[in-house]
Figure 1 (cartoon, rainbow, N blue to C red):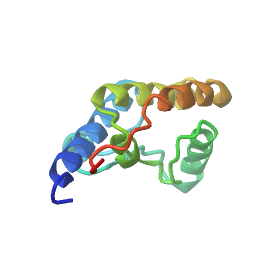
Figure 2 (figure 1 turned 30 degrees about the vertical axis):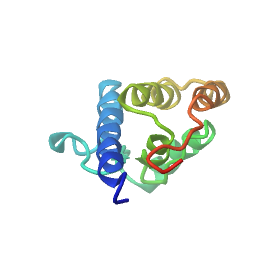
Figure 3 (figure 1 turned 120 degrees about the vertical axis):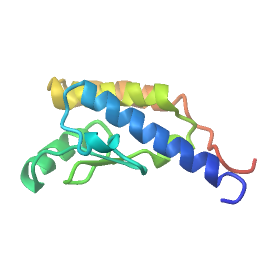
Length: 127
């Protein structure tokens, strides 16, 4: 953490904010827009509670995008794999296709897995 922590945590926040902005631009209900959406590693989609949030989380899970029933998304893992703001736009696109457009999760899952396969090296650590 002494060597990579500041750089890593800074990129995590940039990624979370980029993901949140892209989701909001797709008209998904991102919480805390007045606060630039987030100042941490998490993005929240506000679907008004557990019942609807659980449905949304299940759809995302079918695409291998993990969210809890509060529809909380984290970017730590993808940041460790070397993804940056540009890649958050692609992840937001996957989410929007399933949640916003109702596209088949299996199709998005396949495309998401192919996309993720390009990011296999763990970053922010010693070789």
